[in-house]
Length: 327
Image (cartoon, rainbow, N blue to C red; front, side, top):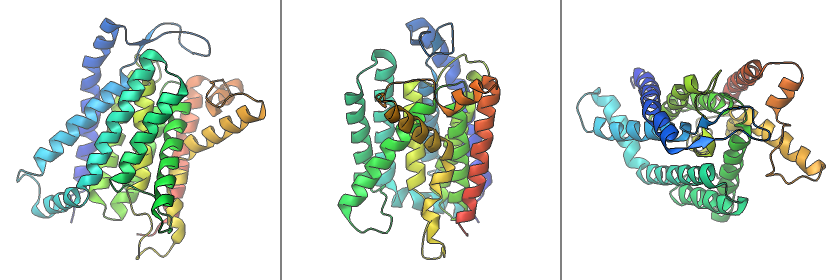
């Protein structure tokens, strides 16, 4: 049997790594002016460090490098070691594509944090990252055996989720908390169907994002920044593709839509905002205060409570996603 305590170790290790990384990146941002300045539509009145993406990225890199060393050492039970080694061998190219895509997303997000580029360059970088992971075998098929469809669906889905996460990063703790909850449920789904490497990755992402939350919620010492929201969105998209939600032993073909409720709040908020902006003739990339979180605050909730309500909604949707699958 696979030692499920390893999942806990992945999550706790990533959380600790993010916490320690923040202790380095936070003063670095302060020294080098890597800050989000107050302005129109922003809820903060003092400059806030944009250390979140750097810290979470550092955490994931450390855990990934550590895992490569771990599978070479006889410290795990032999059967568990065999499962992980097999996973890396079978998904080696996919892992390389994942790491490459993460670097691209983190890079374009860092550039966006500092230089605020127009949507065009961001779209190109997001497209390159999406096509890279598709070329490495992380693809959506939806029972359609057509390479063009598979590449297009994967590209569309990754860009959709990345931008949905970027949209929802509008209040302290919201994007990171939702990402941690979604990653946790992706880990549950993967573990249920013996995708041990994918489950380990999902719980690592969950831990990495959770380790950032004390610096971001309820009072922010740091923001994720576009680097963090791009990285989070990319990871959410990939984690929704990697597990085989439907397989020969799974009698319910509806299992393929399990990622939709797991990412429910991201997708609902994105759909609501895009439709609203189209209705009033506003460019969809032009920000406003009409997100779900803003609506909750406008209805009398504090920002802290609004975020907690959306976290709770995501937990409920994640639990509902379990109804689509049978182990």
